[in-house]
Length: 136
Image 1 (cartoon, rainbow, N blue to C red):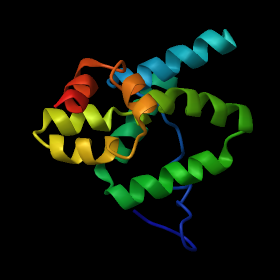
Image 2 (cartoon, rainbow, N blue to C red):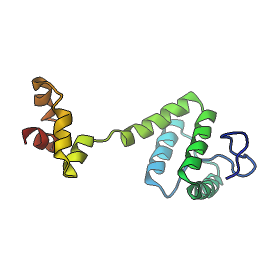
Image 3 (cartoon, rainbow, N blue to C red):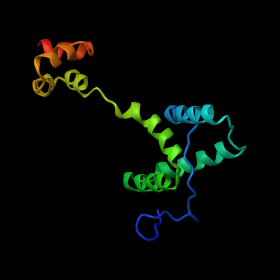
Image 4 (cartoon, helix red, strand yellow):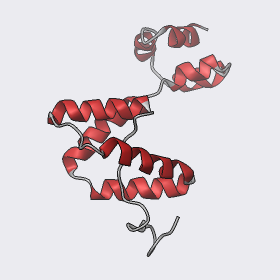
């Protein structure tokens, strides 16, 4: 990747476009955006965006993050809201359930041990995994 001063991407080398026909999560974002804008993509959008995603996938994590950061800086606030709506479910993880599923119940117990009695009673109702950790 060629960079100019600091984190700037060389616009002559790669133009910023981001969507995917091969990724279901990107398709969800595209469907969400299309349903709110009532606009279809330009004729060559799918082909061009796929080319950019192919280039993007060749970069390492640092280069990808710099590129996405630069994309976000160029977007409008309402677009940030749409991105947030898309990302929020991906970032909400049941780490207590994941700890229990990986045999790390003792860590889940330690975390939940900081709750008061009333909160523990409520927490038992969250899901089967949490109930199992609390009742153990």
